[in-house]
Length: 258
Image (cartoon, rainbow, N blue to C red; front, top):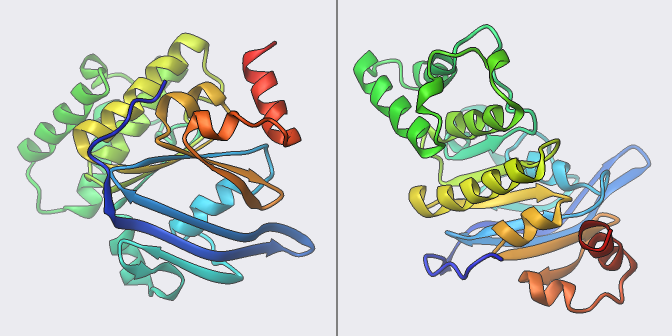
């Protein structure tokens, strides 16, 4: 069960979304989404596939533009940002892709060095190595620095993907299905890592998932999405104490009563 996180600053909203709409042709994906993420908080966005969860975080990162509504991230209105401003903002956002998104032709160390070389070209090799050692230690995989991604397990690839995101010290982490395709033991390890990242690196996070075990373990708040809207928000016990909604009931039964 997710423990209370005393480091959350309830006076500091790092992401504020109001009246967000997004359609693709006749497919109305987001239909009036409101959401606040506070500094130091982990929010889990829970919903079935195709309900708009991934579209939501792509809009937050400026990868998609909304049709209507406001998206304020770290004090900036994302849809109004120019290319250079958006690039600067993205340095403060860590996007953890579902598959880890590692370069197969690079070693783990080279994968981690890549964003540093691209964004901090004046950094020395020794400075890069120190940062690489820090993030590898944080994800418990210091021994993999010279390995190729193909030599790693699925869980290790996820961990290295998180490490590569952390190396630029983002203020906000965006996790897209962090436990998808993993066995239960590895899922638990990833959940523990998400909480450790929140604590050690003082991050605020949005975690996209349909895995209730992940939601319960990592979420300070759960926001359940159905048909492009949030139908319930609160801590895990509050959200799932009332199973009168069919989606809530189906999620709980699928994850915990099979």
